[in-house]
Length: 227
Image 1 (tube, rainbow, N blue to C red):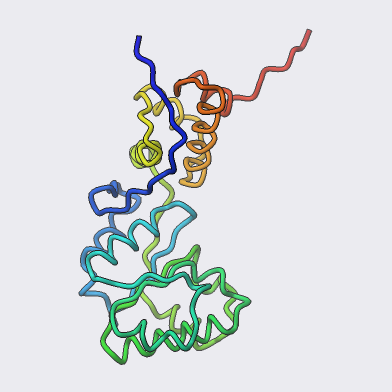
Image 2 (image 1 turned 45 degrees about the horizontal axis):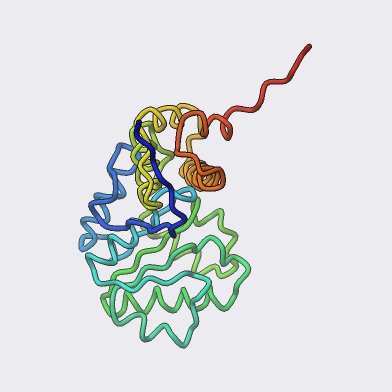
């Protein structure tokens, strides 16, 4: 009888190009990342729900282009001249709606990158017109940027993502467990991430190997006793 041992090791996110699974829901985004030297005006906006692969693709692009990656909340105007000396990726723009300083810095960075012929990648959730940005000039620049959306995963992609998430935590679930989970979780990468974290914690806490029965405790509510 095979027994799978679980160890409380930190999760390691695999963010290489070969770790990214291509399916109809993301193939356009992957193609645009691969063809980054052909972006219109040398800029691209990548949008999608949480866990859709935006950060993964950002790291893929950064490796290809030798770009600097920065979160939008960390932008400071005095850092812009240095950032604009090479390709740059700015993540999570949707969360700086109430941050005037970050919006000003991003507008400055956008313009300086274009002036110096540097490429810039933006990421966020949804579309710019829904981000409630308070700097009109920045919003107009973003709305004028080519927008590529990552869509909710199909079964094949969700299966691959689950396997990757388990692998990032040094876990090897059975094909039966993966199939069981794919059929029952919400069609979202966020749901997949939360399930893997919860199942890993349950397995570690009870010192039991990953199994369909263990997953059922998280995915199937207990039946009420009607007697």
